[in-house]
Image (cartoon, each protein chain N blue to C red):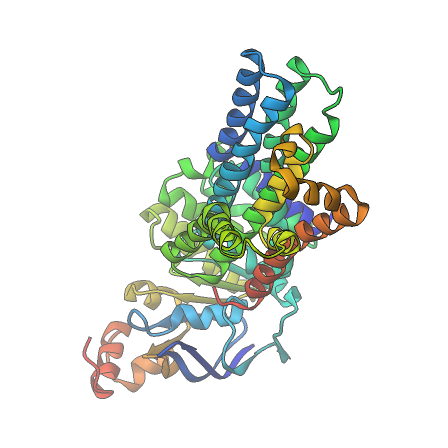
Length: 262
Length: 238
């Protein structure tokens, strides 16, 4: 087993026992179970889950990423005095943090769905929910770790993380809406699609809404989006955008981690 | 032999190490002392690869240390404060370290027995007292039988018995030809353990001398008086 995987294994044991991972699992498990229990249809369950996935999952992930790295500072120092590469430690920590979070999200949704729900007609939508949720966890945990590696002050790292979460979940949409109103006389479909790619939360929202009938409510814009995401080019571009959103913070954080002083 | 050559390190406005050139002999116990903020820990961190010096080089048995981590197989490090992943048990932490150091097959379990760590194996690291954590920390530094020990204030936080055990262990390792570097503020401890003394002041090397030479040269009775004497002559109080 490589050093990275060995580190990941023990980090996994540590992270999986934290309250955070339990909170993610409990939140999704009880919410999904409750929604089904109260007789909601699969589509309504998905829409409710969508909002929790798009708002809370990024918040929990980015905060945990920051917290975890700060709390591990002296452990990181100890590990770096061992004959291992810094990239092996960073990679191991990343894997060990990410897997319990993804696992508890996926299981939290999947278990109640297997009991109460039905796949018929919704496999694509649930698949999209899993992909979007997983991508958001990876993106925001990586961003959180990156902030903690850059800012030596805990409060600075924390503030940056919260700020970014606020911008991507709330402020960004407000600005886009404002601009869309100001420039409403111009054809905006393409700029809007471009704007979406710059925000993983928006990308996730649109990808998921298009899987559901509610996209009919979005009118002409919805039709444009549907046309775009209906093509394999559109889906590929969306996946590439998500992968970039994951790999850039991982790479930037790793780069800083290998060069900084401890 | 470990040679520090013209080591400089600056954190922002603060020059922590100023052109430090000093060597540490193999098979001897070298104490690094100096007031708080004099650069002791930073110098050790340069050797461990945790801090990248702005200038200068460090030679470990004639090899310049670089970004490749292999040289650290020869070093066992005991940090001032140890924090382990808080939900891992002591047993898991020990297993993790052994897993990562798969290059080593023969372990030094002496401190495990003498510190009675077997009683703590199933405890989570966050449930450990500061002293027990420090015992675990010391045990891990000696576990892989390195050639060089780097100990940052090793006896701080240990109870008198554990502290005695650790000092015995350090002397024993020296008799086996190992090199020990440690920092401390406790002069009697340095007097009892060290062969050589390095004194850092404001990031500069004030002197490096064999303990006995220092005492003879200053015509004093013991290390405490000798150091007080030297500090007076270099115009430093306390």
